[in-house]
Amino acid sequence: MNILIVDHSKVFRTVLHKMVANLGHRPISVATAEEAIDLLHKEPVGLVCAALTLPGMDGITLCQQLRALPQYLKTPFILLTSTEDQRLRHEAFEAGVTEIQERTDAKELTDRLSRFFMDEQQEVRGKVLYIEDSQVAAHIMIRLLQQMNLHVDHFRTADDGLAAFEKENYDLIISDILLEGSISGVGLVNRVRNSATQKRRVPILALSGLDDPSRRIELFRLGVNDYAIKPPLEEEVRARVRNLIINKQLLDQVEKQSHQLYQMAMKDQLTGLYNRNSLREFAPKYFSNASRYDYPLSLLVIDLDHFKNINDSHGHLSGDNALAQTGEMLRQACREGDLAARVGGEEFVVLLNHCEADDAHRRAEDICKAIASLRPDGVSVTASIGVTSRPMGRAVKFEEMFKVADHAMYEAKKQGRNRVAFVAYA
Image (cartoon, rainbow, N blue to C red; front, side):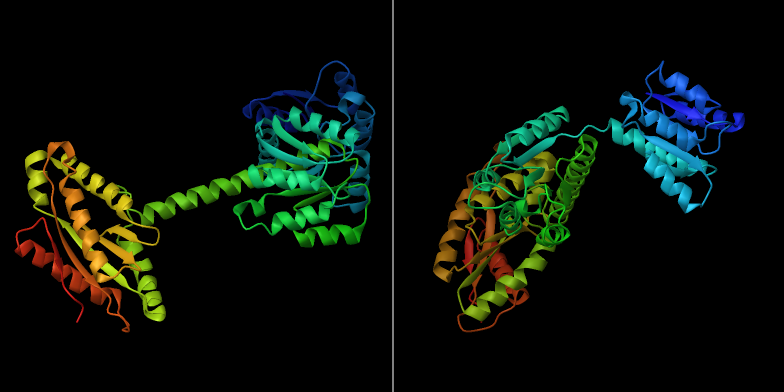
């Protein structure tokens, strides 16, 4: 991109020249506004950095001249000045200046240019739900959004838009406020924000042909993220859409990473089961609810037999494979509401929700047989399983029942391993 630098100081032009070149763009330096105007007629320029004080025509007048050229109507113009004169600043913005930057703050100027180039180069991709009943307005908006490489689903009514919203995932909703059909744009915003799913947080850009402050306030209270008066300028739409989608996707990325970190903290990476941290967090809730509503709850403690011999004789990879297959089998054996966790090297705990003693013993026998049939890497694997159940009508803590089930597991080992032992909670 060509960057035009206009400054009477040769030293400052040299500094800016190097700055722009280091950012990977082509700097073009001139000393006067008249030279700048002459150059603008000869070469395309993507950004202008001009000092306020120039010999002859000043920077504000240069900006006015620039805006008079159709091809530079929307070209970013950064005015470099150290003045605090509010009248001059107001005049500059009225002339079309994009931004006023401290002339002597080289670091801030470098950061500003870096952000500008980064924004220009960053491509936005996403899916937009667009609701507009005007065919003319829709044609213009869809063309603009497609130029931004965005996928657009267009509907004329909020009813059809909401039906699509339920089925698809969108990065942005753009909706007119006054719409044909039984639901207005305000109603659409309300329905989206009251959704019971994560979709309720999708950003919404509201459009209206009326510049009504009370309506804007109402929409922001309902949860719109941005508001624009129709017909909006193309560059305005690009900037608003771009910002909303980038912010939404950044938030999605943060949430995904947060979820991954949570999974790493709460799940055992080898077996995919919950780990000791999870058991410590979730188990008290299971027991508290069981005591409060007095329903049955059973606990299994599972220990793979002679696991050290598997590692020593067949290698740690075979041992890991045995643990992984045991974890997968336990996941499949659990019903909705049960909890399986790996709590030690070869030790597992299974909480059986709404499960009485007889049923828990039967399920433990099934698990014991399933483990014996796994034979990972051709290696024989068996388990000793201890079972206990919460006595009805009594408040019991997890730690207390775990000790009983753990004792039952050791009883199974004493009885010859590869079996289930039940010990009643006293």
